[in-house]
Length: 393
Image 1 (cartoon, rainbow, N blue to C red):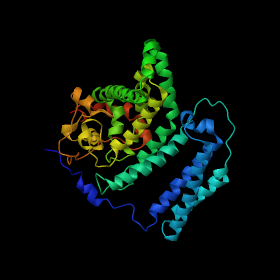
Image 2 (cartoon, one colour):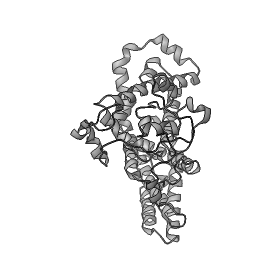
Image 3 (tube, rainbow, N blue to C red):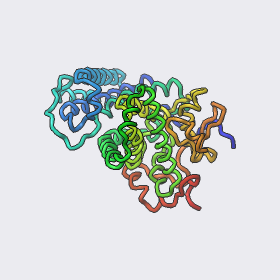
Image 4 (cartoon, rainbow, N blue to C red):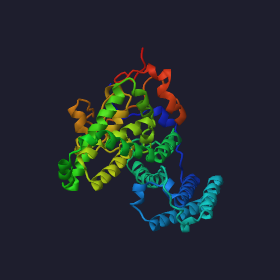
């Protein structure tokens, strides 16, 4: 059957819009979220060495964070008042205002930076706050302006499940960073050539940035394809493919072991070649944005650039459970790599999108804890790798 633009219309026809202007849900949720982030922001000030990311701290100032914290508290309180004024969902407004008051009690925008000490590790709470704010503002706006599935609600099915993955994987950034910084120097120092590193680091930063993209995507391709086609690894990656509703936060649904391995290995070529810190930082920011974009509910095809850069439509086909797209489109950035290795799939018609998403066969359990243990259960062993994402006969 040729690909169509339909996506399980029975589900879409029964899905009621969650947000309606004038009901108070929009203002209530904004108040609660900003209030909660304000409390977390205050905690970052009190325990900076434990709750904030060292690399990210260098990119902002205390005054900038005070301004952001103050704005968050003001808007949280304001939207809480709006919720009360609309006379609906008052509980959410009360929670949002209470969280704002709790942030004020903790010091508010005038909170002092807590004592500094040598922490044995850290959680990326500041990275979570900033990434959530920026990603939500950018991608929710784009998903409503250029939607692929117009009927899909912002709080679509499983949104809370994926939001918890978003929180978990941001808080564990310290673990991933530690693994990456320890693994490459420990096992690949023998491959370093000082003359080569000097030459690479002297290249224009744009050239180094492109090198970082190409090399990282080649490693990403190898890891990704291995997870699909090797029976032992597929159940781990199947957690990511269990997503049935694609949007910007869906890409966060990853088994803990997957980002641990991927982020440890993907920058090894950059370490060996000595790509400078600045272009490497730009690449990391670009990769984070791209991860949200290609999973998003945005109908972008990128036109002629669709063969140069991975688009939402291109990656949606990777998540498709339609037979023709199984085990295709492994790259995160450069479709040319898929084309070279024979795993490229993209119908020419820009209106051709997957009919359905998710794994085939026995559905995965719900919940982060259950999905963490899923790859080690007997049930997961019944699923063959590669084109046999379907359960064994």
